Amino acid sequence: MRRRLKDDALKPWQHRSWIFTRDPDFRAKTARIMDLYARAFDGVPLGQDEYVISSDEKTSIQARCRCHPTLPPGQARAMRINHEYERGGALA
Image (cartoon, rainbow, N blue to C red; front, side, top):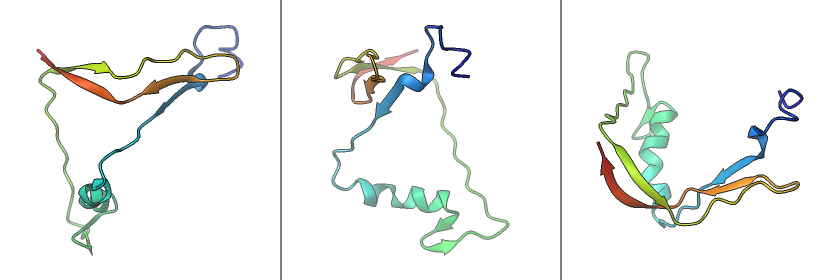
């Protein structure tokens, strides 16, 4: 793929993003969800007939304003996008 896109403007391997959590209770808050990914609930493995269903209704688009500008790719440096944002309401 890299060979084909060499002369093209598209260079997906030059895109990098990161997330830094500032919540000191992040690990405790996410523990139950991570257990479900590992097919366990309250420390007990899920049975063969037990399932985890996750649903999320997307009725609107969240307007988000990035707190830090996106830095374009440079020579030997990937594009940098910080995922910290301010909420700007919802657009329907």
